[in-house]
Length: 145
Image (cartoon, rainbow, N blue to C red; front, side, top):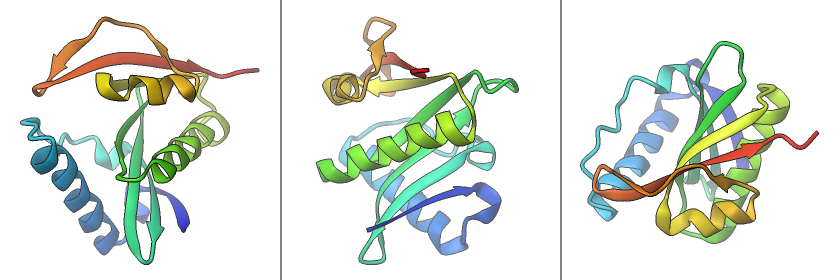
């Protein structure tokens, strides 16, 4: 198992293709969500992924919400095995706080995954709402100084 943290410009073509294919499989096919995955944010995002046996097993991206890097967004967490999901989140959190120097991480979590994120220290900041046919909730993790 090997992890990668890359800017869009540093992604290899095959990596980008695998990432988009995985996101389509999970969000569009498995979850039957009708949202637009190609949202023009990938070019500005930091892409984090775990490869195991040469295959991308988990993926997340970090999107900075403002130029001051005060609030970031962790998105597109994809995993079919809990160890990958936790590991990709830990890498994303460390990258956001240590490398990007963010003070907070904001996520739009699926309600069914809320407990998973609470175990990582995230707190609810909204009531559940519908996003692309799936119940979501806003959550935040503040840097522990």
